[in-house]
Length: 133
Image (tube, rainbow, N blue to C red; front, side, top):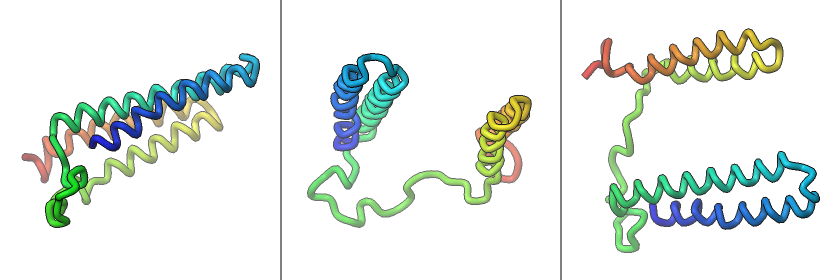
């Protein structure tokens, strides 16, 4: 993850000067753009730091080594729930939240409750029921 952390980390050194240049070009009258670009730089820095810390913790992956073989990257890449319905419920709750911003704010409260239920259901999916461990 060394390359990814450097790429995202370099985003800070790109976006912060761009935000300053944007501020000068707009004569500091348009703060939304300056703040947005600064936030993108901060987000790139956070992602780069996370990838750097994770890369130090787990070590080199096969794609990080020039002498790696193709078969070293084969196998299970993570844990996924192919039978889970909770991501769909969470997606519907997010869509309801955006719908609430468009037609009426009260819909956002209903969608927030549904999102909370979906998150709890997804997190505790393996703690109870058929697939409990």
